[in-house]
Amino acid sequence: MGRAAPRSASALLLLLLLLRAERPRGAELTFELPDNAKQCFHEEVEQGVKFSLDYQVITGGHYDVDCYVEDPQGNPIYRETKKQYDSFTHRAEVKGVYQFCFSNEFSTFSHKTVYFDFQVGDEPPILPDMGNRVTALTQSPNPSPLRVP
Image 1 (cartoon, rainbow, N blue to C red):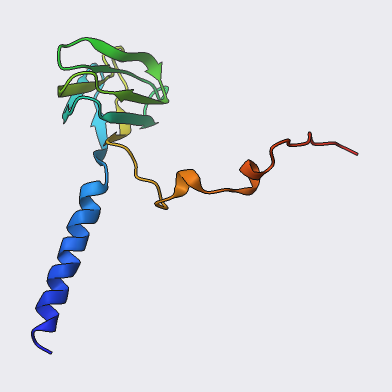
Image 2 (image 1 turned 90 degrees about the vertical axis):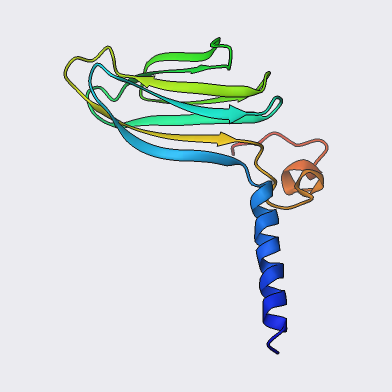
């Protein structure tokens, strides 16, 4: 009985490591952005890998910030000004360190609290055969229009 416990513990550890390997990596953070300031973050991304950035200003001023994302060569691939929230998804064309920045440089008196979620990699399907499953919405070859009595 004593030998079965280490073997099952090793199997459980291996299973957890395999599950972790398939999951996308990322960062989720809420931070203070002072007035007249800029804060940048960096993440290395492999070529061909998808990444996404979701952000929202949760307190301060008019709830707006400037946000931009640059590729490893410094080329802008996303730029928005004075947004309260937004989402951006991109597939990396080159391997390297991508930079994303939040700026409150336009504000001279109100600091902001910003939340972001940066994810790297494709989200695996919840069910292994999800793409091949038939549902009520995909079964009908000729859906009839809804009619209001």
